[in-house]
Amino acid sequence: MRVFVTGATGFIGSAIVRELITAGHKVLGLARSEAAAASLAAAGADVHRGSLEDLETLRSGAAAAEGVIHTAFIHDFSKFKDNCETDRHAVEALGSALVGSDRPLIVTSGTGLLTPGRLAIEENAAASGSTSIPRVASEEAAASEAARGVRVSVVRLPPSVHGDGDHGFVPLLIGFAREKGISAYVGSGLNRWPAVHRLDAAHLYRLVLEKGAAGARYHGVADEGVPFRDIAGMIGRRQNVPVVSKTPEEAAGHFGWFAHFAALDNPASSQRTRELLGWRPRQPALIPDLDRARYFET
Image (cartoon, rainbow, N blue to C red; front, side):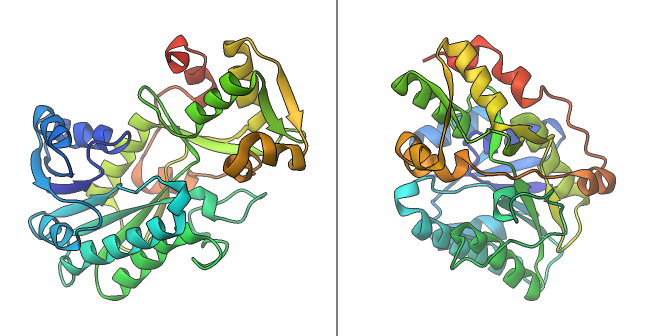
């Protein structure tokens, strides 16, 4: 299958590109820079120049493919709502090239959109609409495209997608510990984060491409819920700094905009995903993966 991949040089997207090529698929990767284009070419993928904001390049990339995997997202939290709307328009543009065909479109979302404090399953809808939770825009767009006859499915990823090259939430926590001299958690620290290794996530995307059902939601979750205190504890041990509880009020000052995520209780199941697709995570779990010097190299 010839697959158009957005975010193809990103932390997750680059692993998906390798997974697809190893399995015999051909990849057309979106690249917005010369460096990204060179990286894709070196990986054995064809290059499609463009960006998320250039909707026509998204349409033409999707039109030239037999399937689309959309992982790109603009990770600028100072413009988070705007970036979520950009993603909505990107999903709509990709879908517009696939209407009336049986070519799959896989949209990326997150388990953090679901009701906190209870085990989230694939059938659960987002806790609220995009007016309250901007990131829901991607799932709203996926539903709209499904209503137009696009064979669209959603992969929800957990707050921590970990592994070599991680530049997400866990490295951010390591940075806080370095800067503040403590590794902090909120309250009891028993709030839970689901997690998955990037290579296991990449394998899931391929399975959804090959075997996924139209309108289905899948959970890329290996660890159902790691207590945040355990994550903070590992960071503290590796950084040789104290591990400290913060009240919610203190956490706002310590973590800033990240305080919401530090307190997030988001246990999530992938049982249905595993049953339907035969997906079996094989890579290290979050805590063993964190217990390596490489995660703490500057």
